Image (cartoon, rainbow, N blue to C red):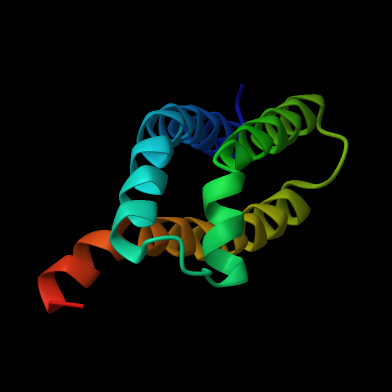
Amino acid sequence: MKRLTTYWFLLLAGLNAFFARYLAFAMPKCESAIQKIFEGKPLLFQEESALLYPWWPWICVAVCIVGATLSLLGKPKDSVLKNVLVVFLVLELCVMFLSMVVAHLPWLSVLSGS
């Protein structure tokens, strides 16, 4: 494991596994809180998707393990894997941001008095 990209992929796999465990615990509680606060009113598509699919970080874990394996095998060049890693991080951070906004939506609604 001489390539730095391998370590980055393994670090991201571990962090995504930790985040997936958190979402599996937190999203059902957030869903019940959202239903209490909004009293069954329809939610936006993004909010419903984030609540229905709290397992998405496990897909990221699988992608990171594949990336680490490819890095160990040395099949694509290291520069290609670095570019894939950056694009993957940007996409994952966008989805993670949306998930956390949805998870905190009830608390923001309560604080604003709605």
